[in-house]
Amino acid sequence: MFTNSYPIVVSGRNGLTNKQKRKLRRMGLRWDGLSCSGVISTQWRANKIKRYCEDEHLKFKLSNSLGNRNSDCRRIFFKNVKPQVLGKYYICAYCGKLRTKDNITVDHIYPVKKSADSIKYQNKMRRRGIDNINDPKNLIAACRKCNLKKSSSTGVWIIKAKLGRYKYLWYLRWAIKTVIIGAVIACIIYFVMHKPELMDYLAGFLAKAKELMKELLEN
Image 1: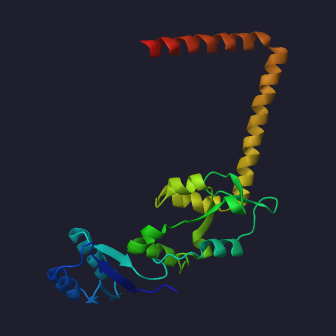
Image 2: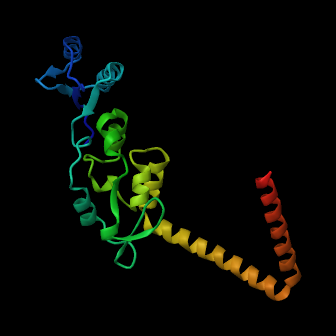
Image 3: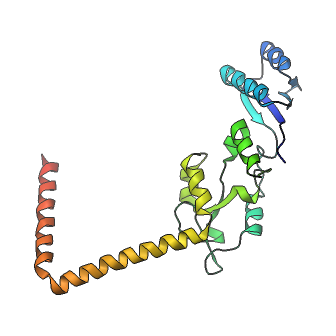
């Protein structure tokens, strides 16, 4: 259920000054001895606090189920998602590589870091029915290389994750790729058997191109 409440925690690397505490108290937060915290009921007030934290170089965090990470994501993912290929392999949602359960990582479509300090992303997640950072709707399989490359990025990575979680799109892509490779091989075989002079011309052209590139690099 979509709720317009924002549990906020504000802290500083070296604590908060008395001036910062007074300002945050006027914004609706309370000092608890370590940080200023409280539940803000409107988005514009939450955004105002976040802008103040950015100006003062303070740490702003949304302390709720969409912003707090725990170690249950793998257990939740594998409980809800079975191997997608041959009953053994998972498909990386970003590159399509096949990996077994032991060699696949579980990635958050909306990154934990962004969700913890972004009101915009938390609202997006709620609109999509995601009420927990480890909700199965927010988890996808990813190979280690893609997971590290994505890190806490969003934008096109979110689009790739949402499309890549559907195995039939990968089946279609693999089928198209197979057809194209087969067509190229068939063309090469045809020209080798029926048009050898064209293959000789192509080989000569590639040799000249190689020589030209060598000369350009030397100069």
